[in-house]
Image 1 (cartoon, rainbow, N blue to C red):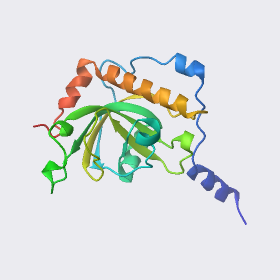
Image 2 (tube, helix red, strand yellow; image 1 turned 135 degrees about the vertical axis):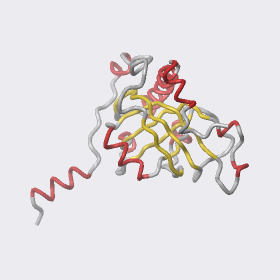
Image 3 (cartoon, rainbow, N blue to C red; image 1 turned 120 degrees about the horizontal axis):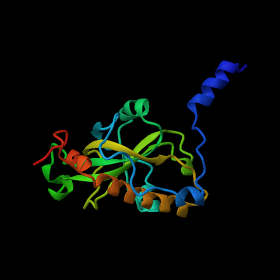
Image 4 (spheres, helix red, strand yellow; image 1 turned 30 degrees about the vertical axis):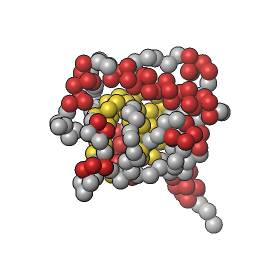
Amino acid sequence: MSTDIDTQVASNASRPEAPVRTESSQAVRPEITGPDTPEAPYPIFLEGATQVGFGRGGKELGCPTANLPEESLASLSSVLPTGVYYGYAQVLSKPDDESSLSTEDRAVFPMVMSLGWNPYYKNEKKSAEVHVLHEFKADFYDHHMKVAVLGYIRPELDYTTREALIEDIETDKRVGIRSLDRPAYQELAHNPFFTLS
């Protein structure tokens, strides 16, 4: 027999409802987010082997992503709400295969990251998916990735159409790049956290 406590635990463990994106919310999106200098809790530095995700980003949305390891989620979720973030990312060659990525592909690039449940796809598992704003010559699953999260773009939303989701993703990319195009943010691309040659 189910108790009130059982019901409460089950509801806390399930995917929360996200607000649905509307045309009016899209119309009022700012072109730049965050202060001119990152403020606490930023920067947040994460690293780990990239994980294979759901395979939808590149195929369906034109936005290939690499998932951060699950152990990154606990530290992220303790300080950040679900939503879309911007910052920098670097993918490194595998230690046993230095030629697995070109020198260009190992540079530090702008990134946008979705932290949450992907409500449009009704995911049952929270994820942190990073889209590095660079065209890689090859897949980099199982490669080591370093990420510096520097700011918040918007909350996680649900969508009535895939086209609306894609439109917001493209806006997220533009907002991320514009937000990083400020001196205090640009400096963080050269932070010693990244492996710089």
